[in-house]
Amino acid sequence: MDSSKNNQRPTEEQRPRSLSVENSDYTIAGIKGKYTGEINQEGKPHGSGSFVREHGGITYVGEWRDGGRVREGAYYNGGRLLGNVVWE
Figure 1: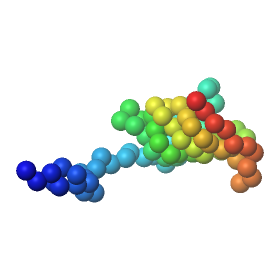
Figure 2: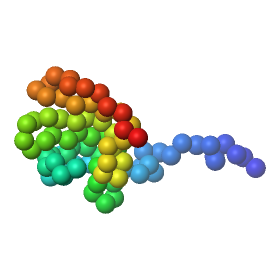
Figure 3: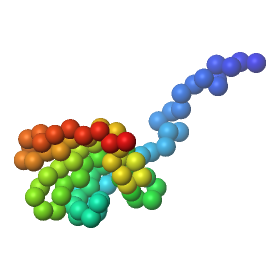
Figure 4: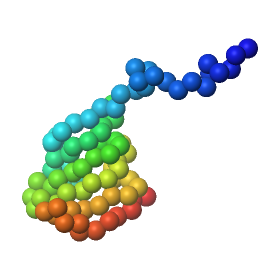
């Protein structure tokens, strides 16, 4: 039996396509803003993305899972780094 066929990587057409949005209204922890990035099947941020607060212009850039911030991310204001954060 040839097992080499079982070890082949999926082609581009076989890989699940990630969904994404741009400037989509989103609220997290009571803060309204716009989310741009990858989403899951339920439309929640999931993967890499950024969130710009409606008031103040502070931007969070990082990883998301099922609508919440996870792993590492960073906050920016006017292009300047305010700080890095690690979420559990």
